[in-house]
Length: 410
Image (tube, rainbow, N blue to C red; front, top):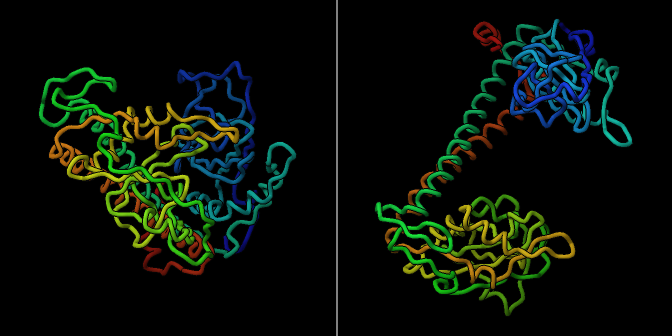
């Protein structure tokens, strides 16, 4: 293939058709049944529903494309499966399959732009058949080498995703164990928040915290001169994310009381998702001379009494999040609010300061591993996007030596 062609010239197209709902099941009988993008994983679909009387079938190795809103997303079918009307199977025949898969990923936004429909955005078989493929006229041998390169990066991304998932599961289990059993092998006692080690106190946060402070309500934006103002989107996963900062000028009388210090905790006080009301992050001096917005509450602790890392982690246990979200009040605009009174009344288990610090250190090691994997994943995704565009567009060509050693993995 040495010039641009239409998709129908290099692949067979099988449009999905939904069988009767009476043939569906979740017990694994029949073939996996995929209906749209909601069934897609990172590269392969995830079976949730099965069908005993399939009408349209995709074979192992077929490229699956979502053809009803959202349009254009792709996966690769791992085994024979039933496809509903939200899916099309693309069976490569005169083009390298993996190259075609990556090519369709590159033009995903273009495919999406072709969708139409008053209720569901969709594309039909004719539109799919006429998609321009391989506009740069890349020959088959080079297609294989390009696909090999992109697949290698994609596998590296998936490896980081597995690390993130595994560490999240490990942390969840370890948090449950440490906050109910501690580190010393003590007998347990029953309390208002469940079982805790016998020597631990359970007290209201107000008894151990130094201050509770609401943030500034001044206007802030990307193009406003002033100081960084941390907002709800910056309070994520226990840490402060500074990737999307806005700036503002707090009122003169607010400047002193709104400054942040290392170890300050920021709690989200309003959110459209109930479980996110009370979400907490710890400030580690990620920024200098910054402030926080009115939808956040700063809690400042004496670290000799209550370790900030310990409280940050406890606030994200099942017990901590259930308490805060359970106290959230729904407002007229559909959001859920907590206030400083809610935080002050939160029951917190308190071991010795030494055990608090040890628990915090243990769980922070897992956090660092997860954060490191997330950074690597983000970097690899950026590399993938750059390579996808430049290789598929032939801005970068694969030389003869690479062609000799390359090969498209199946």
